Amino acid sequence: MNPKTRHEIWQGAAGPIEVSIDEPSGDLKGLAVIAHPHPLFGGTKDNKVVQTLARAFLQLGYVTLRFNFRGVGQSAGTHDHGHGETDDLVNLLNTARSTLLPTHLQHEPVALSGFSFGAFVASHAALRLREQGVPMGKLVLVGTATSRFQVADVPADTLVIHGETDDTVPLTSVLEWAHRQQLPVLVMPGVEHFFHGKLPQLKDLVVRYYPA
Image 1 (cartoon, rainbow, N blue to C red):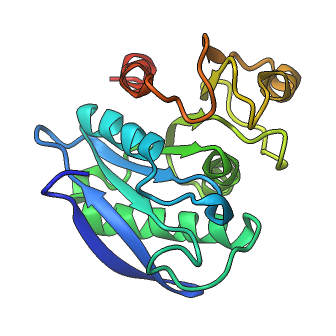
Image 2: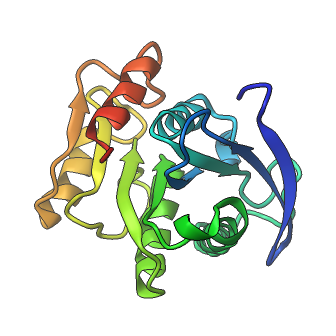
């Protein structure tokens, strides 16, 4: 993402996991983990939407961790339909808290975000992390794949962003999922699934609506 990005191999339940870490230039506020879109359709940690979300959290003062799901890049294992991917996200986040953050920040709320399939995984990881007692900040879900997967219910302060003309995950599907929870959805007019030409605006929306 930038010349200072650290690329490392961490260990997971299925073997090595390829991760990328970026640190903010100013004061460090906490940790953000971002999950990428479907690995069987070209999704990787270097997806442009994922990198945009990472840039937003960097601007907010978070050290960011992106990682390749099982079977992608140098990450071992095979696609596990969200189950193993959720396990990996939870374990990586817990490891990152203790290794990437100074002691005084290790119990501060962590940020979690995902795009498309990654939003589905992030929703279930957030649920499990809360059950573990991990302090969670506002969840950020973009292009949430509600028409393709059973996305978990999320807290009322979750930031959900979706494109009006998304033909991969129809807006109506996201609104249906959100309606059950009385959850607001931020709709970007005329925007499709991959936010072509609108990535700077997406970044600004996350920065604007995420607690400073």
